[in-house]
Amino acid sequence: MRQEGLTNNSVHVWLSGLDSKTTGHTVEKVGSSWEKHQFVFVTGQSNQRSEIWLNLGFAGQGSLWLDQVWFGSTQDEPDSLPLSLNEQLSEIKPEVLRLDFVPIGVPGMGDHSWLYPEGGGRRLSAFSASEAAGSETAPLSGAFTMSWQERELHNLGAALKISRQVNADPWLVVDAMVTDIEIFHLIEYIAGPPTSEYGKIRSAQGAVGRWSDQLDRIYLEIKDSDGVFSNDTSRMIFVNHVIETIQSTQNYPLLESKIVLIDGMDYDGQVLASNADYHAAILHGEDNIRNYGEMRSVLSDFLLTIPSRRVLGESNAPEIIKSFNWQSRVEPLRLADYAALVFGEAGNRVNLVLLDSKLDSETAKNIQSALCLAGREISNKWALAPAVEITMTEADTETVVTSDPAGETAGNEEEREELLIFSFTADDLKTVVLINLGDSNASLRLSGGTAIAAGEVYNFDTSAALLSRDEIKSSRHIYRVMPGGMAVLAEKPLSSD
Image (cartoon, rainbow, N blue to C red; front, side, top):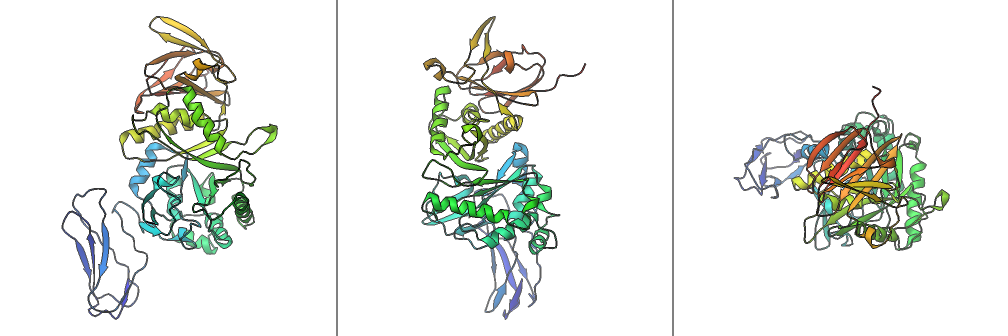
């Protein structure tokens, strides 16, 4: 803070918008050279949704200069995201964090906005109304006010820091107004030496060494949030240009084995021609999923809307779901509804699913945690064909059920199937996910190649509360899945003794 020509050389700083009495501090004898000031405000209890405003003012005439203003809880650090967010993410343990609140090339924002100091809070950005509520960024964005969108924007260094702290791979989003020089500076900030211009900025913002040395994988998506490009050809050309620019940077060799380039464009046609590693789309919808047929219908409709690209063997390249948001207007959604859609194409047409997180209830946190636990267990595993044979158990009776190993529907009876079984394997170890879409308890024993002789089973109820975590000691283990619930079976190596 510094001043020029203030009448009494004093500045008053206060909070407003609180239910309690206004509180503030007065700084006497503010100088004409830069001085750092720090204030602690003691507030009473207030509604968590109420706004709190930081105000600065002075009497008379003159000029007051401010720089690097930070306002937050005393438990938070000025160069970090809130500790409460860190704690929530640490409970969920996600493998990937999509950081689209870091503004890189966002229309209406200035160049290098991702370097703004952390703690600035919400800023208004001149977006058009094309990204309305319900779009892919809705859970991370504020509501619309006329043609202005309020978004919570954060510093890139702070976002990468929290990704590293919760052991998640960061997913950066590069928008349509990014310039070549900004891309060069972005890569230098992530992977450049400490002596480079943006390496020095990185260090000044609290990083220790290159981010490329601290992160195992970095996803980078190229998208057009505001409809800047009017046709598929211009979208594809822009994606390829950004990729070529990234690959031409001096520090790209340090990222080459770690970076995953994502085409996040919404194409009108069905053929993907960009040079990205993957395409990513959104899957949003509503209502409960009651059986196998309804799950297949939703996923089939989704796959028909995305551009396809042939790879070796004439098969379609796998897709990424960059935003999964499912709701219900009538009945509360169950864990099984989410799990059926998240894992229905896992390891086949879909390689990664990013869940929109709205952690406003214990159930929401539990569902996120349960899905992430299952996701970690199947990570880097191949999808297997459905179990050829399972044994349904009830009281003292057992019924052997044979399923199609190719996974094709066998008519109306299979369409109505309420118990879903997804199996995955790597290094001779399997993970099996059991999902009960029905209204009754399901008890079963797995047979053949799907059976697990040793391992653990996590059993969740319809609200994703962890009911039990039991040891699997025999391939004849009987598994029970609650209505609307899920069980995750993780195979462990057999002990030598």
